[in-house]
Length: 250
Ligand code: SF4
Image: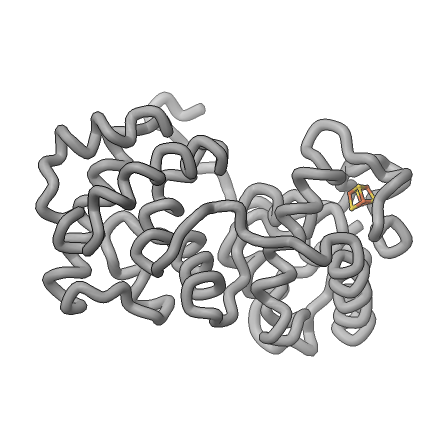
């Protein structure tokens, strides 16, 4: 099946199944309703009590389980209260403290640089907009949307690996690029659903629509999912960007 690039006017949006915008949107809303019914208690598993704590936990959660992050942050959140506390901490100390979460050098640097930025440019307060959050060193678009959605109660589509896999399997987008997937889903769902839809997609990706073995038989959205018969295998074509030639010319 051909997938049309969905940039520009949302009325030109075509899903991988060739559905027009209205049909696609209606199916997306049905999927939202079904997920909501299946996961009425879905919540963010990271523990935090302020936007700053969520920012730190989000940085630490890359390639790490939420349980491990919560274990590590329990002591750290007692030790460091403000952005200034984090920014002042020696890099080596931070590295040691976040080591159990993996990729500790990058994570320690991201924590230090982002909190330095918060102190210098935002008077010690975590900013609330996507532009400001992504302007912080060490904070990417996904983390920024997590903070907007869960610390500030705003609207954000959070495109993690589960979201990429599921939105493609469900035929809601044909894209592979997280920013394009975010844009497609922003067109399909009302703003008020962006955050909870993202959360439920992650829960569904962990519980049912796993990467290796999706449980299509017991899936709450199987009636609306074109990948159910192929057990999660996505058949539609996606135009991938041309491969850059390396020095070897391969
Ligand atoms: S039907 Fe299968 S592929 Fe589709 S969402 Fe459910 S588990 Fe995933």
